[in-house]
Length: 243
Length: 217
Image 1: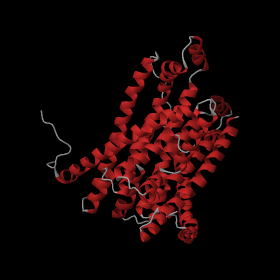
Image 2 (image 1 turned 120 degrees about the horizontal axis):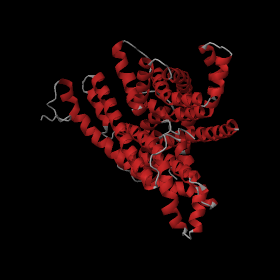
Image 3 (image 1 turned 60 degrees about the vertical axis):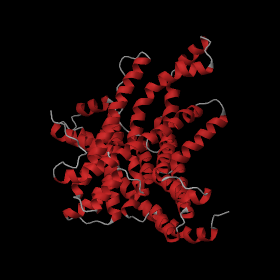
């Protein structure tokens, strides 16, 4: 059996010229996407829960965070973190770290909204039943509310992760050597533009597809955990853009 | 305090007029294109001829799954090879419009699906021709339902428009970068530019949320 390494320099013609570089870029893109989603999820869960809290102050803090980071785009936040903040605070973030942080903070704000919506969508009776069974507030959240909310979260999270993947391309603007940056570099050094950009688009598309496959698997698992055999028909893939 | 107020006052007018004007042009141009194109995409995807609906669906899925930035590169660097010359701003408007058309088409689709079945049946009972059913019965209701979501995308396009600065459009962010690079000092211009976005986007999204509530009832 012949296996073809898509990253090898021995591929014919323009492919051999460009693919090794694009593969390096893909690794950086994946790293920043994973880093960004880890930060985003780590923020989205607590902030989303805070937004459903009974305490007014907790809700206010969550709201301010969400409105602030959804009010400007990733690129503006990225530039601010990378160019403006060092002057204000006196320390310069590493460019990849600044990028991943901006992605995480921004998508975390959208994720909080998803978490909030999913937690609120859990029927009231479920909570009341947990109270009746003498569950502590923590147990109520951990064993009753969150597992059900999680199933609702997965499809919109899928969209957000794809948005995050797409947003990683912006890191190229602060010279992180991701896929978009490598592509531009190749074009500047004389590779065929059409081929390079077509490859870029195809690689990004495949990565998004990979995310969708992964999230479908997660969704099926989560649905089985709470005893729903088949997940409900997934909604059309529209991202909550600007609420 | 390291904030330089004199310089702030010096660059504020430029950012406010020149920069914001370009940003607004890009936003409005991109939004109009996205709203019109999106409607056509939504209609084509509903076509009964699968050789039309399938490819249109696939292309719009592809556009939605790939970054706007790379699409802008394609328009900006590759199109001139085919003899299409445009200014950076026009390129950016087309990029924004095409990218967001793939999102707005989903909005219209949901709007069209939301029109009650009885409306179709009534149109058939009245013997309205099919195209007339669309124009005078279905679309007016579908578009009305879609308005709040389209408003969200208007704000989204506004917020994503800074990406055009990467293909050399001098919008608020592009100008802020230029001003910053003159002095190697980005704190003031970037902060002002960021505040502009907050000051416009937050009230706009609050307004849209209110509109949403009104259209719900």
